[in-house]
Image (cartoon, rainbow, N blue to C red; front, side, top):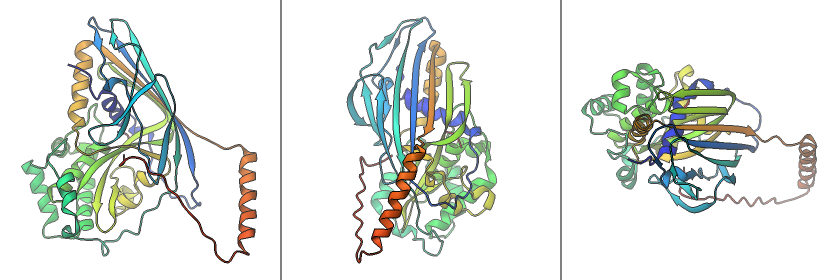
Length: 385
Protein backbone atom coordinates (compact mmCIF):
# COMPACT_ATOMS: atom_id res chain seq x y z
CA UNK A 1 0.00 0.00 0.00
CA UNK A 2 1.24 3.55 -0.79
CA UNK A 3 0.38 6.94 0.59
CA UNK A 4 -1.09 8.34 -2.60
CA UNK A 5 -2.92 11.60 -2.06
CA UNK A 6 -1.42 11.78 1.43
CA UNK A 7 -0.67 15.47 1.09
CA UNK A 8 -4.23 16.37 0.05
CA UNK A 9 -5.71 14.15 2.74
CA UNK A 10 -3.49 15.63 5.45
CA UNK A 11 -4.32 19.14 4.28
CA UNK A 12 -8.04 18.44 4.32
CA UNK A 13 -7.68 17.03 7.82
CA UNK A 14 -6.45 20.42 8.96
CA UNK A 15 -9.91 21.69 8.21
CA UNK A 16 -11.21 19.27 10.82
CA UNK A 17 -8.77 20.42 13.48
CA UNK A 18 -8.60 24.20 13.07
CA UNK A 19 -12.24 25.19 12.95
CA UNK A 20 -12.18 26.67 16.42
CA UNK A 21 -9.72 29.34 15.29
CA UNK A 22 -12.24 30.94 12.98
CA UNK A 23 -14.90 33.43 13.90
CA UNK A 24 -17.87 34.76 11.98
CA UNK A 25 -16.85 37.64 9.69
CA UNK A 26 -18.31 41.11 10.13
CA UNK A 27 -19.23 43.62 7.48
CA UNK A 28 -16.50 46.03 6.37
CA UNK A 29 -17.72 49.36 5.08
CA UNK A 30 -14.28 50.43 3.83
CA UNK A 31 -13.46 50.33 0.16
CA UNK A 32 -11.65 47.04 -0.50
CA UNK A 33 -8.03 47.06 -1.65
CA UNK A 34 -5.67 44.49 -3.04
CA UNK A 35 -4.32 42.41 -0.16
CA UNK A 36 -1.13 40.35 -0.23
CA UNK A 37 -0.12 37.38 1.89
CA UNK A 38 2.65 34.87 2.24
CA UNK A 39 1.95 31.23 3.05
CA UNK A 40 4.68 28.82 4.12
CA UNK A 41 4.08 25.07 4.29
CA UNK A 42 6.42 22.55 5.89
CA UNK A 43 5.55 18.87 5.49
CA UNK A 44 7.63 16.20 7.24
CA UNK A 45 7.37 12.43 6.79
CA UNK A 46 8.73 10.56 9.82
CA UNK A 47 9.37 6.82 10.04
CA UNK A 48 8.92 5.71 13.66
CA UNK A 49 8.23 2.11 12.65
CA UNK A 50 10.27 -0.97 11.86
CA UNK A 51 9.58 -1.13 8.11
CA UNK A 52 10.83 0.97 5.19
CA UNK A 53 8.49 3.76 4.06
CA UNK A 54 8.41 3.89 0.26
CA UNK A 55 7.35 7.38 -0.75
CA UNK A 56 5.37 7.96 -3.93
CA UNK A 57 5.27 10.64 -6.60
CA UNK A 58 2.18 12.07 -4.92
CA UNK A 59 4.00 12.34 -1.60
CA UNK A 60 6.50 14.65 -3.31
CA UNK A 61 3.88 16.95 -4.84
CA UNK A 62 2.82 20.47 -3.94
CA UNK A 63 -0.35 22.36 -4.73
CA UNK A 64 -0.13 25.36 -7.05
CA UNK A 65 -3.47 26.79 -5.87
CA UNK A 66 -5.92 28.35 -8.30
CA UNK A 67 -5.39 31.54 -10.25
CA UNK A 68 -8.44 33.53 -11.32
CA UNK A 69 -9.90 37.04 -11.23
CA UNK A 70 -10.11 36.88 -7.42
CA UNK A 71 -6.57 35.77 -6.66
CA UNK A 72 -3.11 35.03 -8.00
CA UNK A 73 -0.79 32.63 -6.20
CA UNK A 74 2.86 32.10 -7.13
CA UNK A 75 5.48 29.73 -5.71
CA UNK A 76 8.11 31.97 -4.15
CA UNK A 77 10.49 29.28 -2.90
CA UNK A 78 10.59 25.50 -2.69
CA UNK A 79 12.97 23.09 -0.95
CA UNK A 80 13.36 20.73 -3.91
CA UNK A 81 13.49 21.15 -7.67
CA UNK A 82 10.18 21.12 -9.53
CA UNK A 83 10.43 18.47 -12.24
CA UNK A 84 6.87 18.36 -13.55
CA UNK A 85 3.69 20.43 -13.52
CA UNK A 86 0.40 18.66 -13.99
CA UNK A 87 -3.21 18.58 -12.78
CA UNK A 88 -4.81 16.17 -10.33
CA UNK A 89 -7.93 14.10 -11.05
CA UNK A 90 -10.13 17.08 -10.16
CA UNK A 91 -8.28 19.40 -12.54
CA UNK A 92 -6.28 21.33 -9.92
CA UNK A 93 -2.72 22.42 -10.80
CA UNK A 94 0.04 20.59 -8.93
CA UNK A 95 3.82 20.26 -9.19
CA UNK A 96 6.02 17.23 -8.54
CA UNK A 97 9.37 17.61 -6.79
CA UNK A 98 12.66 15.76 -7.11
CA UNK A 99 13.26 14.75 -3.49
CA UNK A 100 16.66 13.37 -2.43
CA UNK A 101 15.34 10.11 -1.02
CA UNK A 102 12.34 7.99 -1.89
CA UNK A 103 12.66 5.43 0.89
CA UNK A 104 12.73 6.21 4.59
CA UNK A 105 14.42 3.63 6.76
CA UNK A 106 13.28 3.29 10.39
CA UNK A 107 14.28 6.44 12.25
CA UNK A 108 14.63 8.56 9.11
CA UNK A 109 12.57 11.54 7.98
CA UNK A 110 12.33 13.99 5.11
CA UNK A 111 10.91 17.52 4.95
CA UNK A 112 9.36 19.31 1.98
CA UNK A 113 8.94 23.08 2.22
CA UNK A 114 7.24 25.58 -0.06
CA UNK A 115 6.36 29.25 0.27
CA UNK A 116 3.75 31.13 -1.75
CA UNK A 117 3.14 34.79 -2.46
CA UNK A 118 -0.57 35.56 -2.73
CA UNK A 119 -2.39 38.57 -4.16
CA UNK A 120 -6.08 38.74 -3.24
CA UNK A 121 -8.37 40.98 -5.28
CA UNK A 122 -11.57 42.76 -4.24
CA UNK A 123 -14.55 40.42 -4.68
CA UNK A 124 -18.15 41.13 -5.48
CA UNK A 125 -21.20 39.05 -6.34
CA UNK A 126 -24.21 40.17 -8.37
CA UNK A 127 -27.47 40.88 -6.60
CA UNK A 128 -29.00 37.53 -5.67
CA UNK A 129 -32.78 37.36 -5.35
CA UNK A 130 -35.39 34.61 -5.54
CA UNK A 131 -37.32 36.54 -8.18
CA UNK A 132 -34.32 36.69 -10.52
CA UNK A 133 -33.34 33.03 -10.19
CA UNK A 134 -33.64 30.67 -13.11
CA UNK A 135 -35.38 27.29 -13.05
CA UNK A 136 -34.15 23.71 -13.26
CA UNK A 137 -34.78 23.82 -17.01
CA UNK A 138 -32.26 26.66 -17.34
CA UNK A 139 -29.35 24.48 -16.21
CA UNK A 140 -27.21 23.28 -19.16
CA UNK A 141 -27.35 19.52 -19.66
CA UNK A 142 -23.56 19.30 -20.00
CA UNK A 143 -23.18 20.62 -16.44
CA UNK A 144 -25.72 18.14 -15.13
CA UNK A 145 -23.80 15.32 -16.79
CA UNK A 146 -20.52 16.44 -15.24
CA UNK A 147 -21.53 17.68 -11.79
CA UNK A 148 -24.60 15.62 -10.84
CA UNK A 149 -22.97 12.19 -10.92
CA UNK A 150 -22.93 9.60 -8.15
CA UNK A 151 -19.17 9.80 -7.64
CA UNK A 152 -16.58 10.71 -5.07
CA UNK A 153 -18.19 11.10 -1.66
CA UNK A 154 -21.57 12.27 -3.04
CA UNK A 155 -24.00 9.40 -2.58
CA UNK A 156 -26.78 10.46 -4.93
CA UNK A 157 -28.18 6.91 -5.08
CA UNK A 158 -28.70 6.70 -1.31
CA UNK A 159 -32.44 6.21 -0.90
CA UNK A 160 -32.74 8.14 2.37
CA UNK A 161 -30.97 11.17 0.93
CA UNK A 162 -33.00 10.93 -2.28
CA UNK A 163 -36.25 11.03 -0.29
CA UNK A 164 -35.00 14.00 1.71
CA UNK A 165 -33.99 15.93 -1.43
CA UNK A 166 -37.27 15.23 -3.17
CA UNK A 167 -39.38 16.10 -0.13
CA UNK A 168 -37.55 19.42 0.30
CA UNK A 169 -37.90 20.19 -3.41
CA UNK A 170 -41.53 19.22 -3.95
CA UNK A 171 -42.85 20.86 -7.11
CA UNK A 172 -40.46 23.82 -6.83
CA UNK A 173 -38.62 24.71 -10.06
CA UNK A 174 -36.82 27.87 -8.88
CA UNK A 175 -33.19 26.78 -8.38
CA UNK A 176 -32.32 29.35 -5.72
CA UNK A 177 -35.47 28.50 -3.77
CA UNK A 178 -34.56 24.81 -3.82
CA UNK A 179 -31.01 25.51 -2.64
CA UNK A 180 -32.37 27.76 0.13
CA UNK A 181 -34.64 24.94 1.28
CA UNK A 182 -31.64 22.61 1.50
CA UNK A 183 -29.56 25.21 3.34
CA UNK A 184 -32.30 25.91 5.88
CA UNK A 185 -32.92 22.21 6.56
CA UNK A 186 -29.23 21.52 7.17
CA UNK A 187 -28.94 24.54 9.45
CA UNK A 188 -31.95 23.45 11.48
CA UNK A 189 -31.09 19.74 11.70
CA UNK A 190 -27.28 19.35 11.61
CA UNK A 191 -25.19 20.47 14.58
CA UNK A 192 -21.62 21.61 14.05
CA UNK A 193 -19.06 19.05 15.19
CA UNK A 194 -15.63 18.05 13.88
CA UNK A 195 -14.40 14.47 13.65
CA UNK A 196 -10.85 13.24 13.04
CA UNK A 197 -11.77 12.16 9.51
CA UNK A 198 -14.43 13.65 7.20
CA UNK A 199 -17.89 12.07 6.97
CA UNK A 200 -19.93 10.78 4.07
CA UNK A 201 -23.24 12.63 3.55
CA UNK A 202 -25.33 9.72 4.82
CA UNK A 203 -23.23 9.68 8.02
CA UNK A 204 -23.73 13.41 8.52
CA UNK A 205 -27.46 12.86 8.05
CA UNK A 206 -27.58 9.91 10.46
CA UNK A 207 -25.45 11.54 13.16
CA UNK A 208 -27.09 14.94 12.67
CA UNK A 209 -23.57 16.32 13.10
CA UNK A 210 -20.73 17.50 10.89
CA UNK A 211 -18.28 20.31 10.30
CA UNK A 212 -17.91 22.67 7.34
CA UNK A 213 -17.12 20.21 4.57
CA UNK A 214 -19.38 17.51 6.03
CA UNK A 215 -22.34 19.87 5.83
CA UNK A 216 -21.23 21.15 2.44
CA UNK A 217 -21.08 17.61 1.06
CA UNK A 218 -24.58 16.89 2.32
CA UNK A 219 -25.79 20.01 0.50
CA UNK A 220 -23.88 19.01 -2.65
CA UNK A 221 -25.46 15.56 -2.59
CA UNK A 222 -28.98 16.96 -2.23
CA UNK A 223 -28.32 19.37 -5.10
CA UNK A 224 -26.95 16.66 -7.37
CA UNK A 225 -29.93 14.40 -6.66
CA UNK A 226 -32.40 16.94 -8.05
CA UNK A 227 -30.19 17.96 -10.99
CA UNK A 228 -28.41 21.04 -9.62
CA UNK A 229 -24.65 20.91 -10.41
CA UNK A 230 -22.46 21.26 -7.32
CA UNK A 231 -19.00 20.42 -6.02
CA UNK A 232 -16.76 21.09 -3.01
CA UNK A 233 -14.25 23.91 -2.82
CA UNK A 234 -11.55 24.23 -0.15
CA UNK A 235 -9.21 27.02 0.84
CA UNK A 236 -7.40 28.78 3.65
CA UNK A 237 -8.48 31.81 5.63
CA UNK A 238 -6.14 34.34 7.19
CA UNK A 239 -7.07 34.42 10.86
CA UNK A 240 -4.86 35.57 13.73
CA UNK A 241 -3.95 32.80 16.17
CA UNK A 242 -2.03 29.60 16.66
CA UNK A 243 -3.49 26.10 16.64
CA UNK A 244 -1.46 22.97 17.36
CA UNK A 245 -3.10 19.56 17.47
CA UNK A 246 -2.06 15.91 17.45
CA UNK A 247 -4.57 13.33 16.24
CA UNK A 248 -4.76 9.80 14.83
CA UNK A 249 -3.17 8.35 17.96
CA UNK A 250 -0.19 10.65 17.59
CA UNK A 251 0.48 9.88 13.92
CA UNK A 252 -0.68 13.23 12.51
CA UNK A 253 0.59 16.54 13.90
CA UNK A 254 -0.79 19.87 12.73
CA UNK A 255 0.52 23.35 13.45
CA UNK A 256 -1.22 26.40 12.02
CA UNK A 257 -0.17 29.98 12.56
CA UNK A 258 -2.59 32.70 11.40
CA UNK A 259 -4.37 30.29 9.07
CA UNK A 260 -7.44 28.07 9.16
CA UNK A 261 -8.68 25.66 6.49
CA UNK A 262 -12.25 25.70 5.29
CA UNK A 263 -14.60 23.94 2.88
CA UNK A 264 -17.82 25.13 1.21
CA UNK A 265 -20.19 24.10 -1.58
CA UNK A 266 -20.03 25.66 -5.03
CA UNK A 267 -23.44 25.44 -6.74
CA UNK A 268 -24.61 26.35 -10.24
CA UNK A 269 -27.59 28.70 -9.93
CA UNK A 270 -28.86 30.34 -13.14
CA UNK A 271 -28.62 33.03 -14.32
CA UNK A 272 -25.57 33.82 -12.14
CA UNK A 273 -23.63 30.60 -12.70
CA UNK A 274 -21.33 29.12 -10.05
CA UNK A 275 -21.86 30.59 -6.57
CA UNK A 276 -20.32 29.73 -3.18
CA UNK A 277 -22.77 28.42 -0.59
CA UNK A 278 -21.26 28.53 2.90
CA UNK A 279 -23.19 26.84 5.67
CA UNK A 280 -20.78 27.46 8.54
CA UNK A 281 -18.69 30.60 7.88
CA UNK A 282 -21.13 33.26 6.74
CA UNK A 283 -23.71 35.59 8.26
CA UNK A 284 -26.47 33.10 7.48
CA UNK A 285 -26.65 31.13 10.74
CA UNK A 286 -27.23 34.39 12.60
CA UNK A 287 -29.54 36.12 10.10
CA UNK A 288 -31.54 32.96 9.26
CA UNK A 289 -31.70 34.22 5.67
CA UNK A 290 -30.35 31.34 3.55
CA UNK A 291 -29.37 33.71 0.72
CA UNK A 292 -26.77 35.13 3.11
CA UNK A 293 -25.00 31.77 2.91
CA UNK A 294 -24.12 32.89 -0.62
CA UNK A 295 -23.68 36.64 -0.36
CA UNK A 296 -21.51 36.52 2.79
CA UNK A 297 -19.70 33.23 2.12
CA UNK A 298 -16.06 32.98 3.20
CA UNK A 299 -15.02 32.79 -0.47
CA UNK A 300 -16.22 36.38 -0.96
CA UNK A 301 -13.69 37.64 1.60
CA UNK A 302 -10.22 38.74 0.51
CA UNK A 303 -8.68 36.91 3.44
CA UNK A 304 -9.89 33.61 1.94
CA UNK A 305 -7.61 31.97 -0.61
CA UNK A 306 -9.08 29.19 -2.75
CA UNK A 307 -6.88 26.11 -2.87
CA UNK A 308 -8.73 23.55 -4.95
CA UNK A 309 -11.97 22.23 -6.41
CA UNK A 310 -13.01 18.70 -5.45
CA UNK A 311 -15.34 17.58 -8.21
CA UNK A 312 -15.06 13.80 -8.39
CA UNK A 313 -12.40 12.34 -6.06
CA UNK A 314 -13.39 10.48 -2.89
CA UNK A 315 -11.21 12.32 -0.39
CA UNK A 316 -13.19 10.82 2.51
CA UNK A 317 -11.95 7.33 1.59
CA UNK A 318 -8.44 8.67 0.90
CA UNK A 319 -8.27 10.28 4.34
CA UNK A 320 -9.44 7.16 6.15
CA UNK A 321 -6.99 5.05 4.17
CA UNK A 322 -4.14 7.36 5.11
CA UNK A 323 -5.05 7.24 8.80
CA UNK A 324 -5.07 3.44 8.79
CA UNK A 325 -1.78 3.30 6.85
CA UNK A 326 0.07 5.59 9.27
CA UNK A 327 -1.19 3.82 12.38
CA UNK A 328 -0.53 0.30 11.06
CA UNK A 329 3.06 1.09 10.05
CA UNK A 330 3.88 3.50 12.89
CA UNK A 331 4.62 6.30 10.42
CA UNK A 332 4.01 9.94 11.25
CA UNK A 333 3.25 13.14 9.32
CA UNK A 334 3.83 16.64 10.67
CA UNK A 335 2.32 19.55 8.72
CA UNK A 336 3.01 23.19 9.52
CA UNK A 337 1.39 26.24 7.90
CA UNK A 338 2.24 29.88 8.57
CA UNK A 339 0.28 32.68 6.87
CA UNK A 340 1.25 36.34 7.08
CA UNK A 341 -0.15 39.51 5.61
CA UNK A 342 2.30 41.67 3.67
CA UNK A 343 2.14 45.21 5.01
CA UNK A 344 3.58 48.02 2.90
CA UNK A 345 5.98 50.51 4.52
CA UNK A 346 4.26 53.72 5.57
CA UNK A 347 6.32 55.81 3.14
CA UNK A 348 5.15 53.62 0.25
CA UNK A 349 1.51 54.03 1.24
CA UNK A 350 1.96 57.83 1.42
CA UNK A 351 3.59 57.88 -2.02
CA UNK A 352 0.77 55.79 -3.50
CA UNK A 353 -1.85 58.09 -1.96
CA UNK A 354 -0.11 61.19 -3.39
CA UNK A 355 -0.01 59.60 -6.82
CA UNK A 356 -3.72 58.81 -6.64
CA UNK A 357 -4.54 62.44 -5.79
CA UNK A 358 -2.43 63.67 -8.71
CA UNK A 359 -4.04 61.22 -11.12
CA UNK A 360 -7.52 62.26 -10.03
CA UNK A 361 -6.67 65.95 -10.54
CA UNK A 362 -5.36 65.37 -14.04
CA UNK A 363 -8.43 63.29 -14.88
CA UNK A 364 -10.70 66.30 -14.32
CA UNK A 365 -9.55 67.81 -17.61
CA UNK A 366 -9.82 64.59 -19.59
CA UNK A 367 -12.95 64.20 -21.72
CA UNK A 368 -12.68 60.44 -22.20
CA UNK A 369 -10.91 58.13 -19.75
CA UNK A 370 -10.34 54.58 -20.98
CA UNK A 371 -9.37 51.89 -18.54
CA UNK A 372 -7.88 48.87 -20.24
CA UNK A 373 -8.14 46.11 -17.65
CA UNK A 374 -6.32 42.91 -18.31
CA UNK A 375 -7.10 39.96 -16.02
CA UNK A 376 -4.70 37.04 -16.31
CA UNK A 377 -6.22 33.62 -15.82
CA UNK A 378 -4.30 30.38 -15.48
CA UNK A 379 -5.86 26.92 -15.53
CA UNK A 380 -9.51 25.94 -15.42
CA UNK A 381 -9.68 26.60 -11.87
CA UNK A 382 -9.54 25.67 -8.14
CA UNK A 383 -11.55 21.64 6.91
CA UNK A 384 -11.94 24.54 9.49
CA UNK A 385 -14.96 26.77 9.64
